[in-house]
Image (cartoon, rainbow, N blue to C red):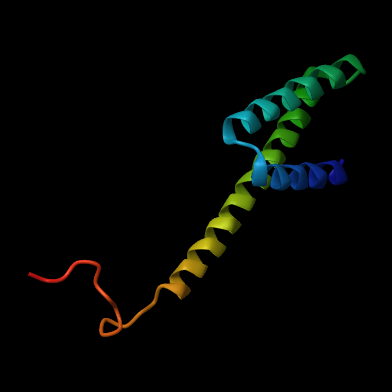
Length: 97
């Protein structure tokens, strides 16, 4: 089950690049429900099925959020490095009155 959690994290990270948040949230809910139903019908207890379904959903969301945090950190660092100018070298858009 450990590998399944790692794969869920990677799938969430990959989905963060192209899938909108609402669509991804619906996919996570679908994964939660489908896994819980399939696991329960295969003989697991209801509590065990819901708990593992929740674990997969949490890992999917963690991958999604982790990718957005990393992209935000890299983007803001790149913008900060590109736009550092001294006040003397700055060309104002509008002249002072």
